[in-house]
Length: 156
Image 1 (spheres, rainbow, N blue to C red):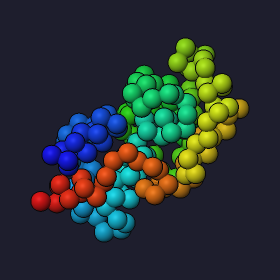
Image 2: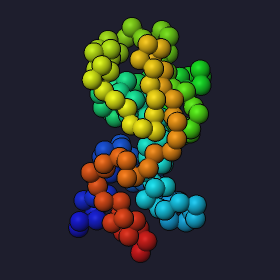
Image 3: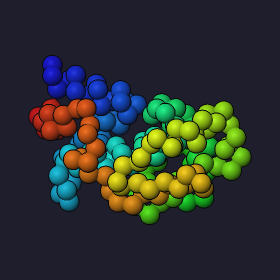
């Protein structure tokens, strides 16, 4: 029961369906490069909607998902409308030029004065452009769920 509750927390937090989540975990278990927890964190945190949220451009992941799917976000100067789009170190994420005066971005300047993005991201508040500097690490992000418990759940 505890494993199921943890799984539901992750799915709700990141807005995932069961199949997407299962694919992330099974891929993490089968790969050999990094630990499974670090791999899952990389997969979840480098989704475009999650990066937009972590940069502080929008106040929640669900709004980030909507902003991306409506085409307000550019990755390397190209419009991307897929919230699960995978970004990697070196990619530049910015708000589209015509979208900067939309209502959802109106209070961004006051929000960004107080907000500091994680170490693996940089954000230029003047240009409204962020960059992924490195891969996210599970220890840096204080996640509210127990990933080893979830990996154990899917390892059966």
